[in-house]
Every structure is written in structure tokens, then in C-alpha cells.
Image 1 (cartoon, protein in one colour):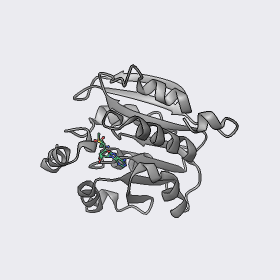
Image 2 (image 1 turned 180 degrees about the vertical axis):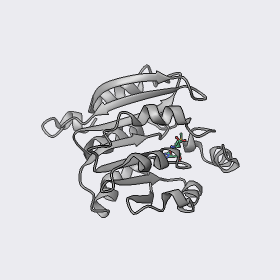
Image 3 (image 1 turned 30 degrees about the vertical axis):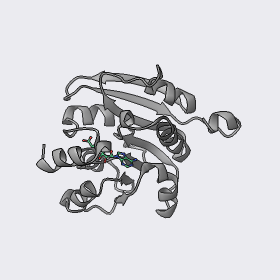
Length: 203
Ligand SMILES: C[S@@+](CC[C@H](N)C(=O)[O-])C[C@H]1O[C@@H](n2cnc3c(N)ncnc32)[C@H](O)[C@@H]1O
């Protein structure tokens, strides 16, 4: 764990974690991605790049990874990381709420999977819904939104992250992984076609 990571945590509430995710949990999250077939992967909130490096090590030579990070200090760290000097990798300093626009600008097609560590616990109701909507919109049919969050679960007026996901996507699976401080909850949601249901699409 680096001093920079801890500093970023204290300076920016949306960092949401004082330590990077453990290697065991990175593997548990990433085993939900089919690296043999994936062409376009997106990372929401790469922080210091622990998932980024792992995903690049598993990806095919013709696949690409676009990471969106809004914390400028993390972006500077990632830019200096020699392991990320990889033609398959693009880093964008922006909010994940702009993911659709960012992918268009990068000429990326539909996305096979998104790995997301952005801390939903720190967001308000509207932002939680907006991020899930953006994720659903950029995924291809059967594409996966894979989220890791801290355990224990937080509820907002009795509503869990599960409920937010189920409103706009198909919640396919979830698990709790203990080899992390604190333990992690992993959610796997699959794209839902909301085209014919404007009420759901606006949720
Ligand atoms: C819990 S940290 C995860 C960092 C790293 N992926 C890891 O596993 O250790 C969450 C990250 O999401 C970033 N983040 C929070 N809100 C964001 C947003 N709206 N758009 C992009 N990144 C965001 C934070 O700056 C931070 O780097």
C-alpha cells in the first residue's frame, strides 16, 4: 500500500478506500470476465491500477481496455506506471457518468465487461442510478457490469445496491470475498435492453 493511496483517500471522499484491492480479490472479480473472447473492456475507478495491470496481463493482443478515473492524483500515478505503457490501454481523466461519450470519442464499440470499484456508498441516489444507467447503455447484449464494494452492505432508505442494479439490469450473481481488508462484495449484473420500457430507462 503506498503513501499516495492513503493521501488520496484523505483528500477525496470518492476514493472510498484506504487500501488497494487484494490480489486474491482481483482474481475473484476478474474470473467473471471471458478474456478469451473479450474485445473491449472498461474499468470504472482504476485508482492505483491494481486491476488494470492484472486485466492487461490476461487480455488478448487485439483487445483493448479503457479506464476512467476522475481523481487527478491517481491519473498522474497511472500515467507514470511503465506496466501501463501498452497500446491496448487508454486512460481517461473524467467521471464514469460520461462513459458513453468517452467510448464514442475513442471509437470503441460495445463493451464486453466493465469492472467497477467506484464507491456507491459515497454517492447520492441520482448518481447511483446514473452510473448504472451509463454502464447498461455501453454494454453489448449479455455484457457484464462487475462491481466490487465493501462489506457489510449499506442501505439507503432500506434500498440496497442489489435493488438499484435490479431496477435497470439483470442481477445475475453476487458473492462475498473475505481475503481483503475489509471483505468485498462482488456483484455481477448483465445488460438489460430498456429500449421498449421508457419508465425503466429513466429510473
Ligand atoms: C475504492 S477505489 C478503487 C481503486 C482500485 N481500483 C482498487 O481496487 O484498489 C475507487 C476509485 O474510483 C474513483 N472514482 C470515484 N468516483 C468516480 C467517478 N465518478 N468517475 C471515475 N472514477 C471515480 C476514485 O477516485 C477511486 O480511484
